[in-house]
Length: 224
Image 1 (cartoon, rainbow, N blue to C red):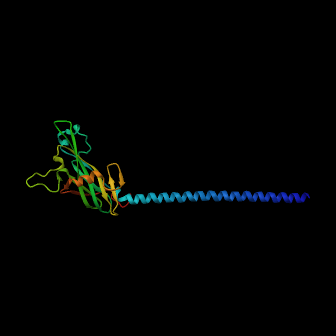
Image 2: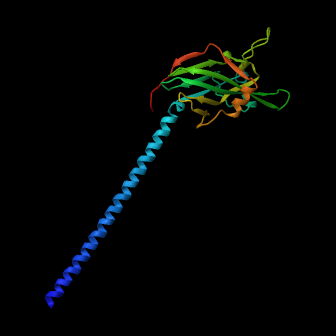
Image 3: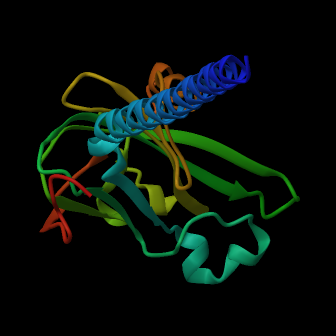
């Protein structure tokens, strides 16, 4: 009888150990499944981030800067909310190894009435097609003409002839894939043309850039 009890005890113990082992196996399997899922999610997240970087890659390498105007010469910028850098030129940079099919840059001209405190702002747009790869384009302000067509006998108006300051404020880009991008000095977002640009184009506030100076862009590469 005592032998039977031992046999029963051994059987029960063996069953318990088997159950514990089974639970341990299930736990190990659950842990493995969890980390496998986490790894898959991390890889998916990394893949999405890489896709976003690839989509943004070309547009992220296109930018602009510049500014100037007569107020910088006669010291009148203290009377105006200056947003230009006073370089007396518009700079457009494409560090991508591919051309940019189209770009539009909004230039705001700010003037102050000398007889009052009234400040006026008007936006004009310069449109560029097929910006070459790895290129830095520079337009001296004396070569930025207001309007494509000038009435006969009238002096060609230029951005710096205006009694105030001028500065580029926004850019719209179409990349080689046909995607559209909205660029400012501090942000890059995918989207249609900004209203400030489309409205100026509708009003035919066009700027014609003549005799641009072109330079090879530094740090031009396929991927960053």
